[in-house]
Image (cartoon, rainbow, N blue to C red):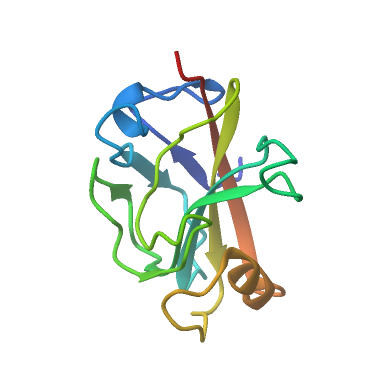
Length: 155
């Protein structure tokens, strides 16, 4: 029997494809629609993180920009509607944002990673927790992980 792995996809763009400008700072800056499937049966919550590892080092020494952090999402969530925040607790992004903050690369094409984690617990964290705090709290609780990567370059 083939084991299904958790999947994160979007009808708006293919994995490693171009994120439509509608979902960026050049458009409506609304999150793309996402579909989630094959969440492991033991999952108690989901975590969704979107980040950009291609930031120029003179802007951010670590080269990372956190665009979206949501945790304690119900494990039975199967889709995130376009422009709608998933139910859960909002963490804080690099821009101080508590909601989706779309791609806005300052220099060239960047990669944006949408990461979904299925956890065997809910995280005991407050709203406005950082990505680092969420990742630290997730340690030892990740059942599965799925990733969707999109690219964007401002014209």
